Every structure is written in C-alpha cells, then in structure tokens.
Amino acid sequence: MDLAHAFLAQVVAARATHRSFTASEAEIRDAERRVAARRTAAVAASGSRQYSERGRHAAPRQVHA
Image 1 (cartoon, rainbow, N blue to C red):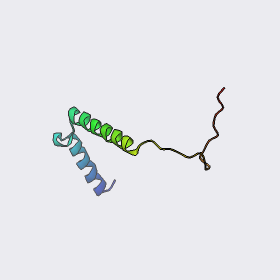
Image 2 (cartoon, rainbow, N blue to C red):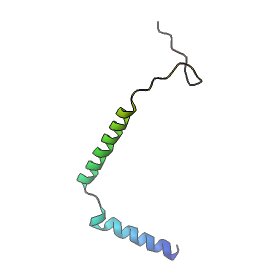
Image 3 (spheres, one colour):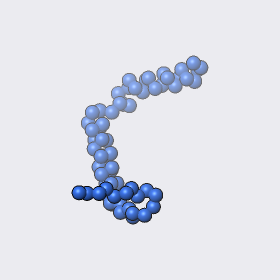
C-alpha cells in the first residue's frame, strides 16, 4: 500500500467513526421514505404503456378456453 492509499484509508476510517458524518436512524428512514415517494411519483407520471401488436416484441396471444 502506498502513502496515498494509507492516507485515504485513515481519512475514511476517521469519517466512519466521527459522529458528524454518520446518519441517525431517523435520517435513514426519512431518506427511504423520500426515495419511495420519488419512485411512486415516477411510476405514476409515466402512465400505462399501450403496446401495439405489431413488431418483433409482440408475443402471440394465449388461447383461452
């Protein structure tokens, strides 16, 4: 390990143990809620897609009895 890698490892270890760089459980849960809301909004904004039956992507329709 060269000097630069050793210095970087020390900085990362110091940040991991320092309280100001760690997130609390409440902050983590809040971030997870924001991500879920963003994904839900993106799905709602995209709407439902209507694919035509033409093209190579169209699978044959199943026969219902």
